[in-house]
Length: 82
Length: 324
Image (cartoon, rainbow over all chains, first blue to last red; front, side, top):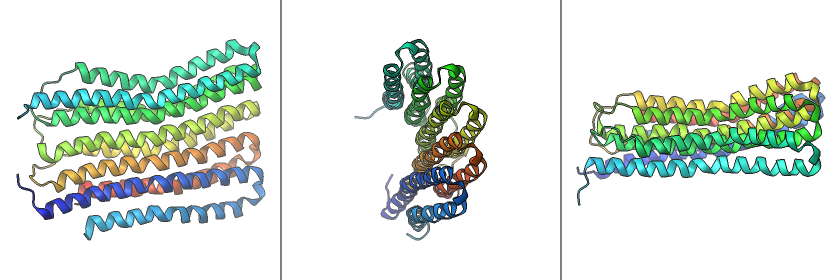
């Protein structure tokens, strides 16, 4: 069967979208979990600071999340725009 | 020279068997080795407890080894099963079964090694409650094995799937994606569950009276760590059982393969990350049991945020399967 150029580009975009989101999810997942772990450790030591520590944890996780969101944006661009 | 279908199916099933056992041996060997190392450390500290320590080491190693035994079973089945061959989909299904079980055994084998190793050191600290420590280790290790069991279930379903009436072109990629999705996603969940199990055993050795609370938070933390593997299983089931219309395009199979890879890789990180959070939370519930309520809540919030990237990966996979 003859494969046209546009077909091939679409195929590459689909597999690229899958790989972008899949591989891009590894880092934020590990990083956010690490932050969560350290926050639990700190709360275990000083439970009275739980509010501050939870807020800080969420801010740090949000920053760590950003690369996951870049992956999501790139995946959606590859799926729907390219 | 042209190959007939039977030759290609044989290549896929023998290649799949090799990959399955080769990858499947990685995690279990490391987990068993870690257990043996900590057992030696424990023996050097308390040689007179050698009977209990060696017994616990062997029990823990047997559980860690089971992930590799699942891989061995699937590899042997792939070599000797020779199913009836009607079309090329059998080749894809058998190759995917091998990949699924091979990747799926890595995390569980490695993860089960952590509680098994910690129990040896824990017995040095608290020889009087070795029974409780063994029980806790068994619970933790058993939960670690679930991702490998998911992978075995998917591998067996792929091997016995009836592919007679399915369309060859997009379905070959769907089956390959189904295997990769569960197999890869199981790596993180198995490893993460092991981290939580390990700190639970060492925490109970430190404060034996916290047994109930520590076991509870360990199970909650491990359950959340297993969710990426369950997302992977869900995507695998959709890819295996959805009927795809025959097409000549190359874009449709690549979308399905991309869906499997996306959920598979996307499950690794959150599984490991949830495990890190659960590890610290369990450790500190044992040390500061009054804070167990707030620690459980913060652990669940932290794990939920870590989980978000697995959810993005699942969304992108579902879009690849159903929308494009």
